[in-house]
Each structure stands twice: as C-alpha cells, then as structure tokens.
Length: 89
Image 1 (cartoon, rainbow, N blue to C red):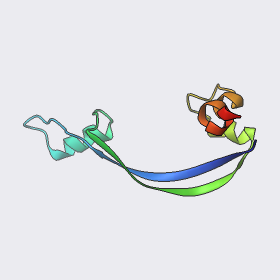
Image 2: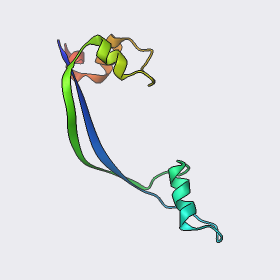
Image 3: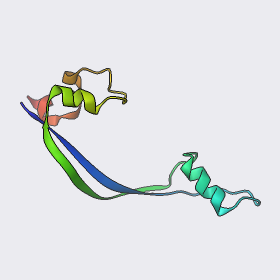
C-alpha cells in the first residue's frame, strides 16, 4: 500500500461570550480571547482548500508528526490509527 500526504487549509470561525468588569474595555475582551483564556460558544468551519498532495514515505510521515503527541509512535501505529484503508488491509 502507498500513502499520500495531503496538506490543506481551512478557515475556522469562533464566537466567544466574554464577561467584563465595569472598568474593562473591549480591548480586554480581545486580550482574553487571544490568550486562550475562554471557551468558545461556537465553532464554524468554512471552505477547505487543498494546498499540496504528494506520495509519502515512512520518513515523511515521521517528519509530519514531529513535535506532536504522536512523535514517539511508530509509523505503523500512525498508519493504523489515521488511515482507514490501512486498518482494512
């Protein structure tokens, strides 16, 4: 079986409800959101555009997960968890 690495970009819209003290401003609300201090009320995904697609080697897969929680996983485990066709094969 061969694998393809597909990179895409999507826009996600978030909506937050921010409680402000009487002396706080809208700039404070922006600051809370930018500092990831709040839970969002809503997430909406917009169009997704594929930027790049190419065949992927095991080394490409290992490189793609560097710095993530999967970094210490083996390539076989990554393929089995994330590729439906690999699970069926």
